[in-house]
Image 1: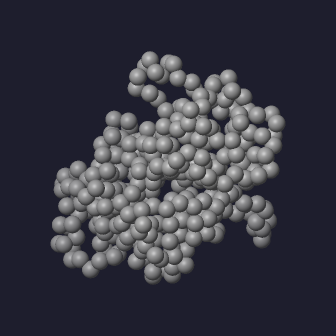
Image 2: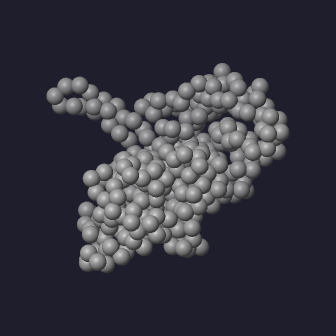
Image 3: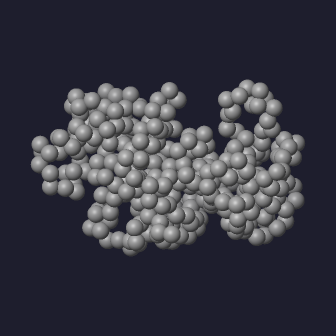
Length: 343
């Protein structure tokens, strides 16, 4: 097999908490990402899902060094990203890009669209003004906008149009890898499908690899080749899309899947819904052992004492759980609504 385009190994990102006083001593740390590993192949989409605060966005930004990793390795196309100097990192920006969640906050309100989309050419190329204008016009057309839109400012566009502008800027230098940080979660449902279809078309035409970060599992299912599920800074399940959606083995993944609406009203009324009790623990002081055990109905003493490894309990699926759910096992609501009291 060929080497993956992106290889993340034991990635850690902690944010220091400073105490009061003149010297601002570090008194604690927020453990946003705690030693995760995964690969992304060329042209592949890895979906990264989980609740708010699970560390998804921090992972994407740490890979691009928008957040400096605390430790771990990020290898892009054979290059160790965490060791790159500033000039080398700037050259890397031509190959890796990001699309942010809030399209308005990621666009300079003082610049017209022509300047926003053309800025990568100013920084990384020696194109003339006429050549940049031609490239920008083509990029706007590629994302479904008109050339005259280039003379307008971000506040003159809808949310979906702003996100298309952000996508045009991200693909300007023909990158091989893009982090999509919840690219449709801030958009109306009516325009989400158009943006998702645009991203899929661009991927097919340009052979770009995506890290698609989202909390909407129905969107992730539509766009991803593989899916990783995060909880409190850890990957609890990762694998190919079909087995993960058909027979998830981790209780947390099962709970997330049960919250996805089904279009068939009869099936929606008949299915069992798993309602997790309690709140997500603080990333400042996460639970020992399995971090999900405080909300898991299958937890035992072992879960408090020993951190589970990612193992293949189901073909094509790695699960970090001491008591994984078998593919043919039915989870009843009366069992899932109560948190285990043994730990």
